[in-house]
Amino acid sequence: MKYFDKVLIANRGEIAIRVMRACKELGIESVAIYSTVDQNSLHVKYADESFLVGEAPPSKSYLNIERIIDIAKKSGVEAIHPGYGFLAENADFAKRCLEEGIVFIGPFWKTIEAMGSKIGAKHMMRKAGVPVLPGTPDGVTSIDEAKKVAAEIGYPVIVKASAGGGGIGMQIVNDEDGLESALSTGMRIAESAFGDPTVFIEKYLIKPRHIEFQVLADRRGHVVHLYDRECSIQRRHQKLVEEAPCPIMTPHLRERMSASAIAVAKACHYANAGTVEFLYSGGNYYFMEMNTRLQVEHTITELITGIDIVRQQMAIASGEDVAFDQQDISIRGHAIECRINAEDPLHNFAADPGKIVRYRSPGGPGIRVDSGIHMGYSIPTNYDSMISKLCAYGATRQETIERMRRAIYEYVILGVKTTLPLHHAIMHNPHFVEGDTHTHFLQEEHVQRN
Ligand code: ADP
Image 1 (spheres, rainbow, N blue to C red):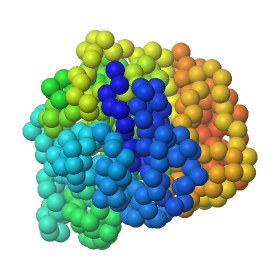
Image 2: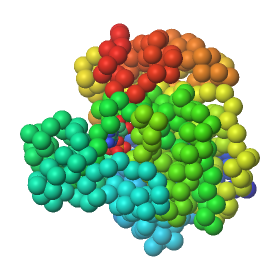
Image 3: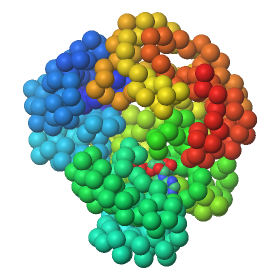
Image 4: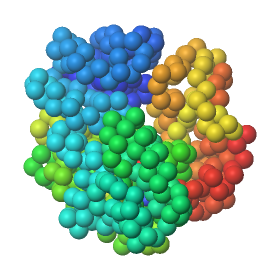
């Protein structure tokens, strides 16, 4: 089954190539868009056709909805895959595609809109019987209300932007004295980053785990999950290492959490691939948010389930049903992903764009590399610093760690600073090896980074 004849990929870098690989396998023609600094990028070379979308700043290129729609119409594609980031969770873009008769490879725009509000999503999930963290039910409107709620739930609390993403603007507050300034800072950042100043307060968990479930759902409401991922190793609330399955998962916990994940997807009438994120602490779990897109770390779920998630996205978007039931899906082995970012782990993860003067990517048993870079490639300053995803797969978690260590040893990227030395240290950290991680792991472990 081909699903579509021609698809536009509204993205760049490794994820654009990942989607084009699925297109190539299915016999679908792919159309790339590129900004002025990306004309020599691999995703442009990989595509069957490519179009200049605009200048380097994202607002002029990969976020330029009308220009992308124009290119889609001019090139005669039937569908657009948004990848992740940029327009992937932009309800207006999904709506514009629909208006133009172009299939948006993702959920219905109203679902994106509903899940784009963390406050709205928490309301919906509370109603659906899914556990959520206590906090202000709606946006904070007065400091007195904030003080009252924070005192009730107990400090520390976290101030979050309702429209937030990418870990931006979250403020941790340890006592009442810090509340007022955290609220005003949070609102200011929320307004400038997301165009919506609404913030809310919730209980801040000490050293929780971030555990998420991959789901697939079709338009007739059939929902399955593709098991769990552990994503606790983070810097600035953003993931750096992910693994599947979660090392502390038990059959009982998986039964409860997966039932909640499916309830979340059903509550918002989800159709396509999505991720339900939870925080886990002291035997309890809480819904945090639903990401209505393909995620960076979908690769490790593909490795343990054998299911090509991008292919499934295309099938569902073309109107097909999810072709399997929950009992048909099983997991085998273990997979870990290390995000290779062009940044300096020794200097607060400052971005380090520049030219790659030597490049050799690892291979051999159980290794998967999804990257958008090559020898001589100049990393532009305008976009995300992630340049490659290194994934290892093995029969056991221990074997997977050993393979990842070996792949890190093989991986040569010279010319820019990268997170590779940090990943080397993490893979040798005794707590990581035991599976004993939490969201403050990097701050606490002071892992040797060079
Ligand atoms: P974003 O949408 O900006 O990525 P999330 O709500 O997904 O933000 O949270 C990102 C990370 O921030 C989580 O994985 C976790 O490490 C931390 N975090 C968020 N909310 C809480 C909380 N209530 N308690 C503790 N940590 C939290």
